[in-house]
Image (cartoon, rainbow over all chains, first blue to last red; front, side, top):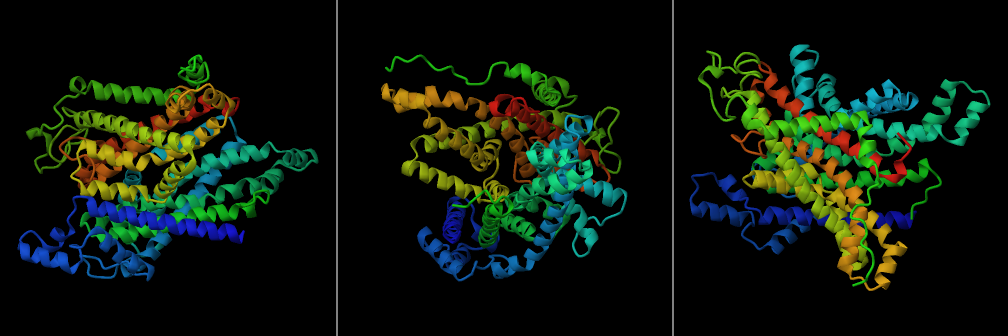
Length: 306
Length: 295
């Protein structure tokens, strides 16, 4: 276990190093000139050259990347070109909002997805099952910006139950969390349905039924706990999907998280911000995958990590 | 020459299409795809107006878009253009990107998975570590960054989508290729002196066809959604070329007073993505022998 953990941590570190290298390289070779953005259109060539030198952007790629890595190992993500603030500070200020949104989204997708999946499994092959599976297909096929706008239109504009956007109260959290949760609920309901169907086929469920336990007791006490754990362990893998979704959802709802920060950074070619958010997202994805793998032996002791 | 009989070009189980036709969800999907393809191909005849034509009578006196009905069946957009015509021509954009970007992603993914799975060794290790690395990339963030930096044309958008979407295919193809490469009939081919290219092309690839079909179909759905998202953010297909995503991007300021401008193209995106998901999922059940007999 310890050896496994050490190996996985080293692998994760290498993956993050690779992500930083590729992102840096892409931003270096692509025809994006951040200096023009900073200097503005009327800047003289001299000003442009000065800014380029100040930011170290006149240096060769290897030097620039080495400098970036040097900062990175000390926890320094560089300074935003346009906001003149440390990127680490900007991200730290916005991370709580994103984490709150994610927690809300995970709650939504689990409640919706697991309920749908269990009902579908119990009504397998009937109309309710087919309707629920069709719903789950619709959930995974709906573009998140359309879902955002639809929820906003119905529940904020028409019904006035929730604010149109912003941050601060529980009411602000509901619609963006629901938008992210709807997509996930589609995946979870399908996984939950097949996990539940598999468990209902096992011998111990037949035994429980044979010894005369009631249907509700068999399902709630014997089947559900065994079916639900492997599905919940998938949360770690979700993080990657969330990291994409927050860019769109945070922009639509005006949610002040790192997704919105990323979108602002991308529009202004603010390279340190793009790098910072990409690395933080990649970090979250890597940690999520690692956690998902680490919890499996606890859920199913037959599985050993090697 | 090895002198062996040619393997059948497809290892798809017989009767797959008949079994597909018995699934109601798959039929709904096929019908929806046929509808969108018909709309895209016949757009010049079906569309009441050219998609870029701005009509003087297409706006109210206050300059607001017209609601559905009358001379403009689905209403007009903020510039007084006919929404139905733009949605019909937008179907072309979605389908072209869906097919081209997904075709590229599928080709890259299959090549990487095939080579890595067959050769293993250092080349396989390098390719699969690179694939792991791409899995850790926040795909949408990468796509948005790339699309925002280039001046996006239809082809660049397709390329960006292909660059972030090949990874899943590569992993699946890799797993299947490693399993196939270890089978006896491949060892026998090698013993008979068949060259690597011949084994890959004639003996491994045909067995991967069902997987490629399934992932190719599901991938179109992902591609359609990604294109719509990029275009909605304004870094995808650029107006005046209509795309369902950029119709919403252009008109979202009117979304409270003219919701049809957002939700009709939105419904079109949803239906097309849904169609390919339904068909892809049914294909997976029909083509995968381990799933047979289950619902």
